[in-house]
Amino acid sequence: MMRKVSHKMFDHQQLCRARTPILSAIAFTATIFFVYANGIISTIALQSSSASTKEISGELHIRITERQIMSTVIKQPLRSTQEEIKEVDRSENQSSVIPPFSLTVEERIEWFRKKVPEFEILKSDNLTKEFLGRVLEFFNNECDVRFFMTWISPVESFGRREFLALESLFKVHPHGCLLILSRDLDSIQGYRILKPLLDRKFKVAAITPDLSFLFKNTPAETWFEEIKSGNKDPGEIPLAQNLSNLIRLAVLYKFGGIYLDTDFIVLKSFADLRNAIGAQSIDVSKSWTRLNNAVLVFDMNHPLLLKFIEEFASTFDGNKWGHNGPYLVSRVVQKVAGRPGYNFTVLPPMAFYPVGWNRIGGFFKKPVNKVESRWVNAKLLQLSGETYGLHLWNRQSSKFSIEEGSIMGRLISDHCVICEYKYSS
Image (cartoon, rainbow, N blue to C red; front, side):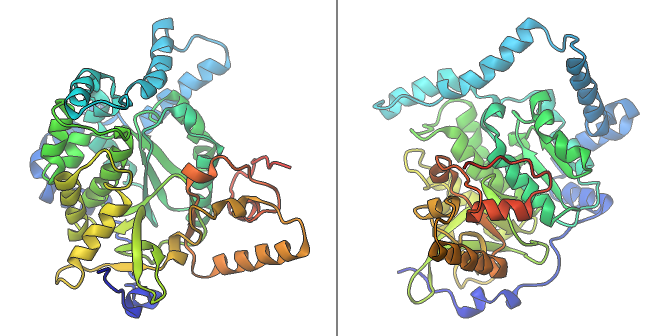
């Protein structure tokens, strides 16, 4: 039986008003060191051993990339032909690592074992070795709020819709920090995408994640080793989707902050939220019927995150959509309900999911008469109240154009920082 959520859990005033913990560089590094000393001693030692090592990441990385971009502008060669081909191949290979249908489990494991080298996200190289140092350096900036996103798709597919999510985040949190865990965006092409925000002094970076570090000393460590070795069935669902489900849990567990999907428009400050998850749907008695993992707000080392990771590793099923994501968080929260030691809040659908995936299309259409205009105005007024942001359900809404005068069009106008979006007529 689905557990009921008391009115207290839906009362925003019950939230602790302390801001999401933004530690100083020293305190943050000390905490990470204390919990993950074995994995960090060598990294920090290398960082401090010489100025040249420290400059592997951060500002030097950006300066080098900026010079490379300038060389492109003045028509000088940037990379060799072989490197250009490799860049194209990497994007094309994304589709080649989706398993064919109608394979048996044994056949799919055999297919996957041969394809593992093509999964860029699974590789360990110089970029992954720099991960921790670059993260620590990035968060050395003062951040009012610390945000994370993931992007495991080709860089070319990071489009205007996704960029709008970034714009809305910085419109509301101009002094926030956004770290995008992505190998594909951690590139020259990715830098070009983020440069308009960097030029405006917003704190955003794309960093190649070290999955071995993120999953180390968590229940997902063994699961990940089996995946890397090709000894585990990835299922029919693209592995990237399930890796994103796990990465968001691990990065919050090890660093703390706020995770957002890239199809989420931020409308109100998250600064006062702490240890919160959103209900996607509720029943007539106001009890939640499903939670979602598109938005997660948690302190570092929060026990609920550890339970999520444990559930992922122990019940992983790559053949069921949502099993390792939204359904997972719903299962775990139902299990731990009422147990001591967990401190979190379930927010109502209006907080993050004010419209369902099957009705999102109406937010993209402009009103054509007075009745529809009144509905648009009423909905915008409602969203300006208790809604922190709007999940766009890209799997459904990506087929819709944003029409000028629609709810989405109005939200974009009010929450953009560059504001160069072209509406459909």
